[in-house]
Image (cartoon, rainbow over all chains, first blue to last red):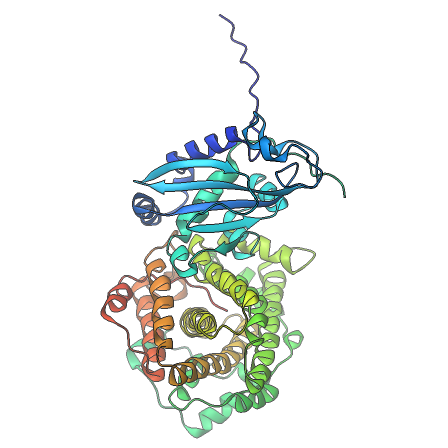
Length: 187
Length: 334
């Protein structure tokens, strides 16, 4: 029996494989190490919101390299279903969305949606590719919200903020999912 | 800074009556004179005009007389106090509380301009002055963290990044909401309902409740111990500036509700979101080294909120009263 591990290929950012990994990460929630850094009371609040969260998110990347809608991407409409997804290198970038539906304390749907506009969701948020990449590289989710790197583009603001600590922790989890982040094309 | 009374004495004394001489001292002191003004008097001064709120031109004229030069402060004694007189526990508690203000000042500076677009002409003068105040307060904290605490960086954002580890995870509640409310106004700057929701978070909650509470905690510590004279001077002058901001903000909310009584629903809905977030803390802040207990901070916090609501005439429905009982103060402000 070989002890050499097989090479693990990371799914492309905003690919179906990445969406699947995001779904698993969100369903599992923060690891014990992350939980240990904050008071139990905070996590009780997080768990309480998660258990009853009825909403869906459309989380957009406005300028995904090689993404659907990119003007120099002839096969754009089909790419979300391709193995590597739209996160392939090249292209000037177009919008794409990660759709996340919550229900019963877990994620009931998590997929990449590529269409002209955002999918129907309770809350639509979006940020530029650079913001997603910075989040993946460790920039904190709290300031990603506070500095308006990610913005609420549609949905009831006051209702959304009742779950903001839950959202910020989930954004941290999404950013930490391993993925191949393509280099944007030089303009 | 000669008085050495307990930091929490005012909680037991209750509201105080200011003499005309005390009011004159608060209103007319130059920066050096502010060192000798009692912070409890300045906080009382914030509330003094809430029942008969001044108009925006009066507030603008006060600004012209009260603005101060942040570069006139000399932090050399503060640096000595910080390094040689304060204990490690005092330093850690102080910075845990002050960092919320360091970031809060920056946030209220950059999120305010968009509110000015939909304001009346006299109110625009007041808001323009407030933006300049907030910029000055941002520089005040930048200088304090560089020259006293010893953080290093090439620019303001470097220092903000360096102090961010002390900022609580729950900071994003009121301040993230403010950022998104500002973006809502960017898209529709004359939407009066959105302006009232923004004003409730900014002027009533962040400035009227959070800011005045954190000011009181660190300033009464500095006065009690006789430490950090430049911090005391600059931050007490900041508190005097905040009195104009809170009065202007309460004037705006009061006028909005008088003009359209259903605006009270926007205030209640905003408080409903804020209070539902405010029942949770992510990390323990040790107030004891600064002369406070958790219970005393809660009392201070509720006093600040109740006085604003009562003075401006905002009643809370039962569900908000219930949420209020669960609140854990986030010590931040702007």
